[in-house]
Image 1 (tube, helix red, strand yellow):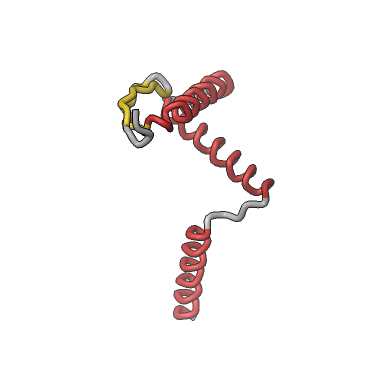
Image 2 (cartoon, helix red, strand yellow; image 1 turned 135 degrees about the horizontal axis):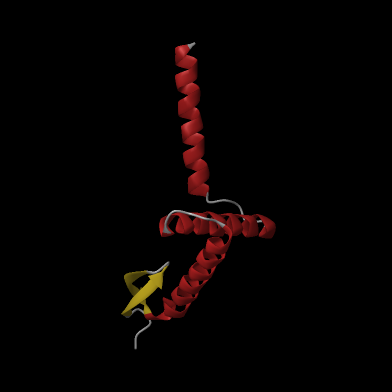
Length: 102
């Protein structure tokens, strides 16, 4: 089987099935992520009384993103340069709008 070969998998996240086509060499990593997401969703269910699975998935995404950001900061990695450039562009636009309205 070729590393670039794609395989079809169905994964269940928060009691919902999602069909995926992933590279064979990414399969184990993707399945581990799915398992981690489901574990976090179950933890959140035991703590919070949300209305539906989408609420739990949103909380899970927020936690995972915050954790990844914190671990990048601890390792001393800089944030994504493209995001920084976009933020600078937005700030420049806001400054331009503010100075035009004065």
